[in-house]
Image 1 (cartoon, rainbow, N blue to C red):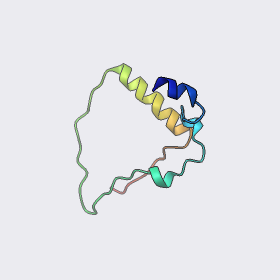
Image 2: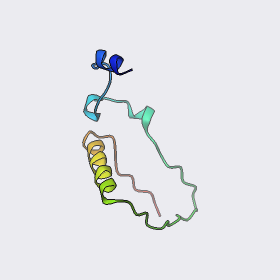
Image 3: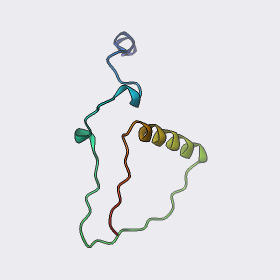
Image 4: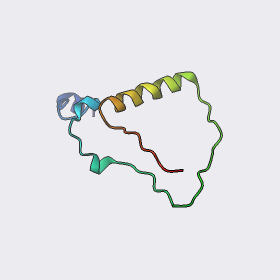
Length: 75
């Protein structure tokens, strides 16, 4: 498997920058909400600070190439 990946390295996307023009219609994820339902407030989930740093870096990469957008849902 490793040899295959190394031989055809130009075929695979190794970062988000390698995927310009990706059609977001195939990969968009939405949260379907039912009208009139109250949001459920969950308790704070704690994680190790190293994990939060990795999450922040990944989110910044995805935000930087336009994979993420802010969506405001009505209360």
